Image 1 (cartoon, helix red, strand yellow):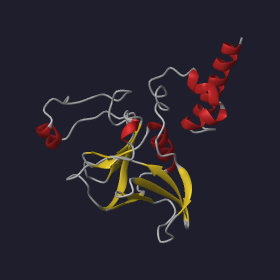
Image 2 (image 1 turned 135 degrees about the vertical axis):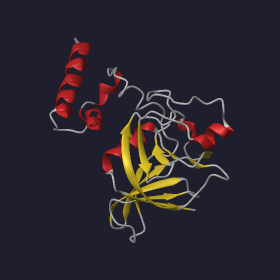
Image 3 (image 1 turned 90 degrees about the vertical axis):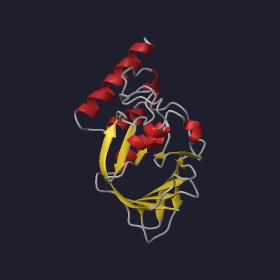
Image 4 (image 1 turned 135 degrees about the horizontal axis):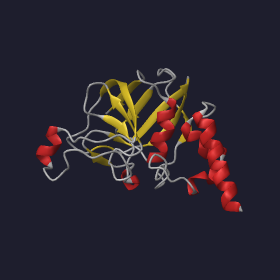
Length: 197
């Protein structure tokens, strides 16, 4: 009986999402136990692995406008500015030595469970990599990706939550799948991203 109630709850949450009354990721807040019963590839694994650096609301530099993202490479933190002097802080993985960068970009595209095509430069270093990997639980881009301008860089999820807080990537900004889903729901195409070194 309890299992049937859980299925009904998930169905109601899905109906609310489909009808436009809630975002896809709100279903977990509406029905916290829904994660136990979801079976679609777009939902399974979003919550896999907790971040070693929990997200939290913090005071932040007032010079950044609400709705912008600031990434501090030395701190290995991403800040989403919510109001003057306030931001949500997330732990991130950043580029390893030789692959760190700085600058101002905008989010040019957003994708859920994106496929991955390793760039030519990466294939030269790692010829063992696949030429293309479809989106899914094993994809290194994780549950969501936000593309930064015309660059090869992205803010994306990760199937390796233990790398959060580390300098391990080829320049992309990694987040846990839970955190990247949260951020993805807050930002839009055109969001300004400051990357600081």
